[in-house]
Length: 73
Image (cartoon, rainbow, N blue to C red; front, top):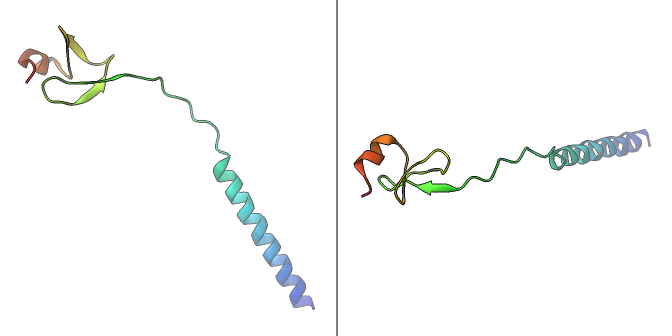
């Protein structure tokens, strides 16, 4: 009879531990949202860069000054 009580208690403790682990995994604090940034394609090499970091010449965007000077392909 004592073995049965110990077994039931062990199963109950295991259940509580698993339930706690599942809750902690799904209840993560909200990560800070990154601002929505438009990505543009370099007209020379095709690399996508954030619009605010890209260099614009006429209607084209470039990832670096070197590619801006080289021009679109």
